[in-house]
Length: 284
Image (tube, rainbow, N blue to C red; front, side, top):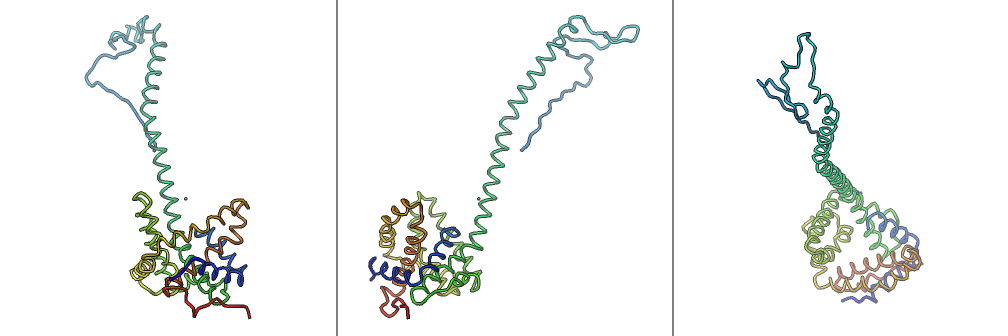
């Protein structure tokens, strides 16, 4: 079995012996791994009708033509025409406004929804193709750092070794976690702990099929999810101090310390306890 003290002691020793590279990896992981128009027209026609409605007056076209051939309008119609036209235009404007407002709202909402979906798709693609393999490389660095001075080049491990398998496996992990999170959040948190060891497993053996990676992580975390949660909570004091330093303490100590502790947790679960034979490397 493992204890929090054992994991943290091992993490601090490894961190102190390879400090700046571990800090750099922590910074990269936290900042990279951890985005109608409508038209309306009104027309009317009356085929076979010989009269025209104009401002409430019915006028026979034939009666508007004098013997001289000129077209005349009734005096009443001429006097009231401007007011009638103004009323008609105002009514048309109001009707047009009432008709166009809902369509404009739907158009704006549709554009916003499309933009959100587009940005979400871009984020998913970037996360799957670039960031998840980087996460595998980061876990490779951290686990290696428990035994020997790890090099920054380990970050490229996920791109150089079975890249497609890492992309597919961790993409499914993200999708399943997201779907479980839709069930009142708590199931998503539980599943995130169940899948927690997957990038470490891929960092150890990227050739493992996706189903085996899921199965191994589930087996490792069985009976350990609550203990891992308490382990996370044990850093809350450090997190509060980090807030008081505007995040500087988190960047230069707490984050790499936590990352190394989680790597130590992976090894403890892998060997069913802190492996006495794989002690932290020491400076020569």
